[in-house]
Image (cartoon, rainbow, N blue to C red):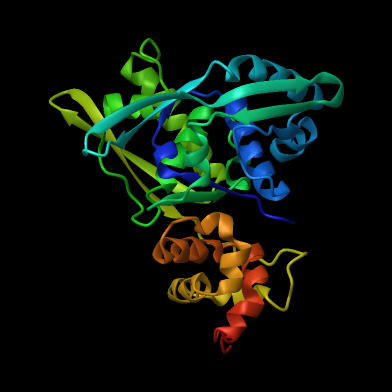
Length: 315
């Protein structure tokens, strides 16, 4: 099965916005459509998201999906997001922009057409100093918009497995919590932190723990630690016997070693040019090392791994 990879610039991951779950899913599917169709993302051509794709990817009822897409169309056009950049003089610039400039729902065809705004296109398509990537399947089981948002924020720190302390107001903004929402601490922790973490721990490739930080008796911020789940050792019925054992025996050190070798391979650069962007070889190598933790990617790269010196471990 093909693995859909989503790549977002970390400036976008860190932007403050409050999309609901369906809107988040729509945008993620549109990003995949841009990559798979070869169209890329621009401010003129609409990207098509089929309701059938939404149904299959997120395992929702057909009638519910159609209604959800219609409602999302009504809301998405009005949504805004904010982010910061540096001016030529080194001053902080605060931006506000819209996600899309046009949204179309074709009822008889059950499709949504999205045209991303000109402001957001560079953030999605350009990989600068850092980037965050993840497979769509990691968030397919998440039913909370806060869980999707938190997962995105956390994996931007995958290399360290922990975040710095995020002050309360900043965290509320990053999670898209409005000023009048969840003003009581217990409700905020339950719906914005605890339940999302439970979903992430159950449905994604990481397990998360949160630590709250106080000044006196007042909660002033949160930090998170997380780790990659161990790959299951049980062999699935459809696993390729020629590569399954090799995959389970590949060490983390080997993944980083061969991730670096693959990053400098012109064939890999050509095939995954949308991930290279203007990012460094170091960041691209890290991404490839992460991809090698997935058996589907390992099988894809296996012939190249052998070329670069990877050999079958001895029993």
